[in-house]
Length: 425
Image 1 (cartoon, helix red, strand yellow):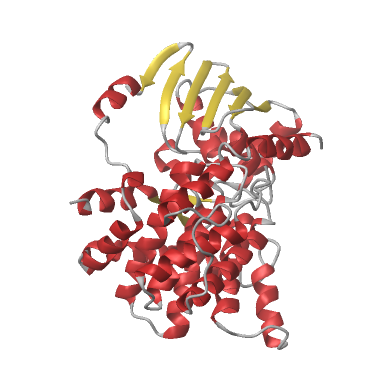
Image 2 (spheres, rainbow, N blue to C red):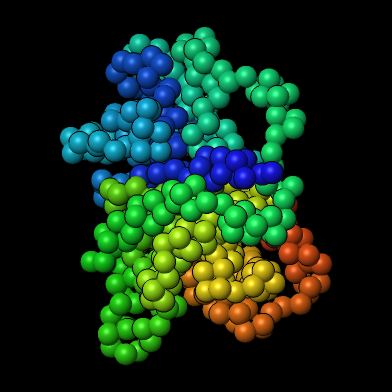
């Protein structure tokens, strides 16, 4: 009954992004605002929600050695093309980087944060010698809802009409884990094969991390294995590949990631450990594609409750739980054992904080890969946290809901403390 709707959901939640999606979205909004008026840049003012602000605060901008929201906003104006959406900064030139750095020094850009928001908001105002452009993004990183030129509306999304027409809209939270498993078992391989594109895209990114990009965590794991200080099992291999990819992404590599729920790191964690296990265990592509789909669906389900951006690390917690469920499926585990691993992950790493996009994301990603595969392996041995233990609920759906609720509303004050800590610098 839900086959086509689930397929449509999966395809809509997948997408390629160059660099961390939050500074990319800031660049997109600034670019769109500038395109509304053109001319010589004078001033940029951007207001964001806490999650967007955090994640762009200290992460690398692809194709540059620069970091942060300010440079992303300036480059969005100088070299962006809004048609490329989250690959808006794909064609940066060296002279534009030099100019952007000078403009940042001249303090032509101001990025403010609006506390208390739990959904994505980016409001970019660009002032030039030709006028004032404005663009607003809401709820999703590419969802431009308003474009203005000198206060006159050039584009406005019909939100009220959308709300009215979407009363009967399909929602993933109306389904159960059993529905996800039935879907991935029953769908034709040709219909789900597109998920394998995520492996191709994210592995190309991982290849850029081999030489020690970012904090060099993937490379360190490789060296530790060669020194026989850690084993070369499927867990350490998954950690190494995941580390490579996130190192490259957070280090500003000019290669896109395949996102899920608007996040490249979510997309990496939800897929790369599965690719590592499949490679080590010689598992065929068809089963891998189905496992990716399950990983994605569990991730999306949890994110429906936690929100797109939150105080906890959705990459590790939501995508980590998704990839753990996918690993159990990949290794031939039962439906009940998939439930077990979701409970295990809930009891294990829920609550890991998000302190924004930075090089440390590699550490969280590698921790998630370890926890996810270990959880899957012990679940297949029928080792699990029983229902109604802590945040583990009476049903696996309750558990996934509870994971999300820990982030929102549970950790909203935590988010404020994290944000204040970052703003004190």
